[in-house]
Amino acid sequence: MGMHAELDPILVKQHSLVTRQQAWEAGLSMRQIDHLLTRQLLLPVHRGVFRDPAGPQTMDQRALAAVLASGAGAVVSHRLAVAVRGMPNYQCLLSEISGSGRRRIPGIVAHRSTRPPDQEVLRGIPITSAARTMVDVGTQIGQGLLGRWIETWVSSKLLTLDDLEAQLDDIKGHAGVPVVRRAITSRTLTMAAADSAAEAELGLLLRRHGFPPLTLHHAVTTTSGFDFELDWSYPDWMIAFELDGYGVHLRSLDAFEHDRFRRNELSIDGWSILTFTSRMVRNRPKTIVGQVERTLRGQALVS
Image (cartoon, rainbow, N blue to C red; front, side, top):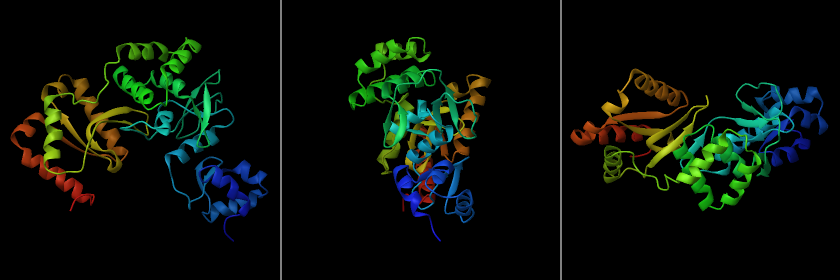
């Protein structure tokens, strides 16, 4: 016996997800549900939330699973909402929601709200509005990156400044409000640009040698909730190339340790990182090219 047909409409509607309660309401007994789990025709995602292994595992599925596990009133929010709506050069590996519940769920970061945030349904997923999302992430990321994100959504018509201003007026006590206002006023980072001449030269070096196009300043939120920005990378393949300056990265013990902590967090999530220096870019370009080529060949990305 395969999957029960009663579950098909739910799985189709919910990105191949179903809760135990939904399966029971569809007519399955608890014994039948457990039998599906035992035969791995359903796989647990969170407590009481299961996925059909025949369906693709997507970010939308991960986002909706977090909402279903968190109960009534939960919505995708903060950095995960940014990723679900779409932001160039950004990926979020964290499951992040807002809601009024107080139950802690492993693998989900929950922001408690006494007042329901502005929300809508996107591809079947309850999610904070674009304006509210920007205010929320204003408490989590730097002002420069926030400014870039706001401009990206405004230019792509996902957000209007009028909607953002209305949201700022509506939740004046929110900690993200002053950060967003400063980002709107400054509008400092309207174009992606290398942070240094050496960083730019590294990108040019790799481009001259015919490697696939790289992404500059890709932002990542790790599964543990830390936000990092990579110099040059292939996000789809989780390969990054970092340019470390001697003075910048050894300016203090705290900075030195943070760099190691950052690398460890990214490595845990599966990133492969090669680190170069400005001196290597100047004096050992062939070494850099060779190491990059071997890394990509190891991933079968170049022949």
